[in-house]
Length: 284
Image 1 (spheres, rainbow, N blue to C red):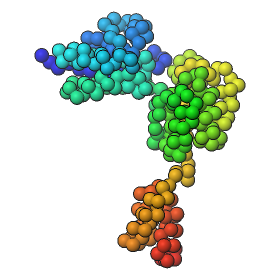
Image 2 (image 1 turned 60 degrees about the vertical axis):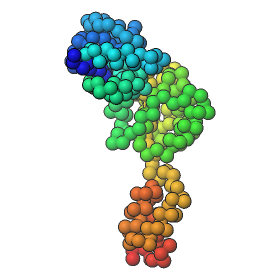
Image 3 (image 1 turned 90 degrees about the horizontal axis):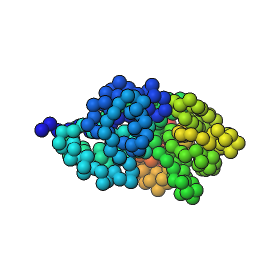
Image 4 (image 1 turned 180 degrees about the vertical axis):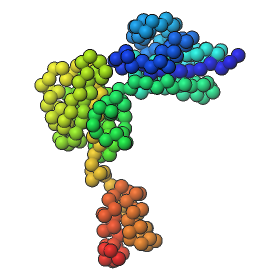
């Protein structure tokens, strides 16, 4: 019997016109669809004129569902996996199933499509050459502040999901940990009728979140500019040891370049330390 296929299918995050022809075809022809919320997915299928058997697959039952789904895949069935919106596995269920299917040698097809992460990044106007997706921050204030403190010197653009009732507190915490002037974008209700993009500094956005009730409604994706390179924390002991070792083996300019790569220090700082240690004058 032919091996089955597991299809990870991206679905619209709001605008139904964003369903791809390939995603529609996959949903129409799957033997069953594993859905985060079967009621929500039933509404999607009804709107698309599709009727297929649904299986519940969410964060509380995924471990229990995996063996039965693997058995169906081994029997040759095609199972589609969807979340409530966007691309499955990204802060949504599906990881355990995909991991188990991959280990079992099942063919896995990712059918790309909408994602709030890439949609927000595309509209933000912040650097996108390197970014880091952090998902949802901790709900408790102390834990959230501690986590943000660890991210304060992250150089990449950061993307978060946040609940509307926590966005004001989160922005206030971000301003406290990242600095008032760090640029950010709050993307609300992306691709939906009330899509709104708020831009400004963390201080400006935190203030607006307190004053504007509409700001605190709907699905929210938060994009925050990365820290300036000068904010990167350098391990002083590592820097000192790297200078000590490399200054003996390489010319100052080359040693400074290697030290900078190893430690995250600026090349100029590394060069100054090396010339000071070796007694050479800058430029020699």
